[in-house]
Length: 454
Ligand SMILES: *Cc1c(COP(=O)(O)O)cnc(C)c1O
Image (cartoon, rainbow, N blue to C red; front, side, top):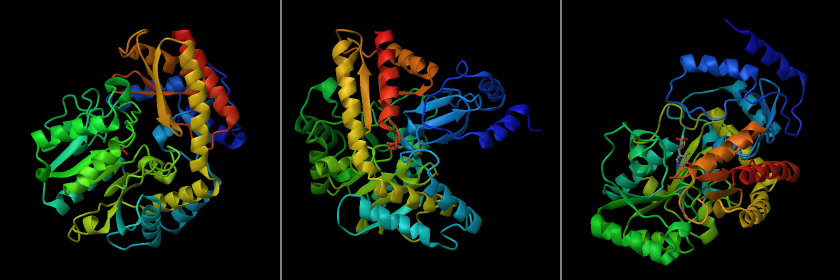
């Protein structure tokens, strides 16, 4: 039976446009959101995180409108997904037309052109001019699993090297690849075997150069696993959930060279850092690294679920026919959304906009960090920027401060996300269409939050 909340929501959707300004008209979460939250507690598994429980009715650009009519400023893009912003007309048009034409055939049963076009775009955009092929999936975790499957098949080897602080997903294999126990792994074992974890380059905490950190990781791989047993080295070029850790310069090139020298498949997990987020199409582009395989998802399809595995044709094509796939992988609605999102990013030059956002945010946060004692480090690339909170005068992680800052922002209608192995990092992932005014507004609230917690 439809209840009052749903009906009034439908009516309000038709009434007003979203506009560009943050506007808080009730306590947050508002009364209608509170009703929905109470319903949720009854019926949604307790294992699914409750973040900022304003229930969303509609959205446009960098603004989300909740069921109580609050206009929330989005500095998270649904975790780096809506890079092109919400309600982009070109995407709505492409998706609507595709829904009307057909929603599903299963590409493995009867194919369609948009799947091919997405693979052509992925080949053109990912680093390197070598021959590439792709396979499409539904989620990031699925892309990572398939990248590992392909690397193992191509090399005939089993071991997979991953890093401290890594996040690669929540399926069984990707839980094994992910570093952090709570909340991702605790009680969910046994995990997949032949996964070996080595130290990441984490300049704020290890003080090592890229070359030194790479030598440390390589020594551990060679000593504990043996190069000839390694199928793949899997790394996020800028770590996401682990805390927006940007490795020291030279770390990624040194690892890439070692993989090439040893017949190991270098897999860059660009699911969070890719698709323009860091001010290049891919984060590895900042150091000219050319991975053997790149995994993509999140920002790829403007909010529709789509993921890709793109790699050297000679690696990707070793797999026997039928060895890769899935019912929904490369769904036609998601595929046309990706094509529309990529076109929009090119037309608006959003990759360059990510660099501009990066400069604005870094300048702002660096100034803030000089004024307060709880910010230990400000880091990131392009529109993937974070700061790490510490106990003043130390490098000891300060998760309580991160929590308080997120709450302060949420209370004022700004979405800010925490992350990090120690839960002490605040990350900014604004949609790249965010205006300078919106960004200044969000940074203003964030600055007040940091000062109030200091
Ligand atoms: C989010 C993420 C994943 C998992 O993607 P899902 O779509 O949530 O399965 C994998 N790797 C990285 C780097 C991510 O940020």
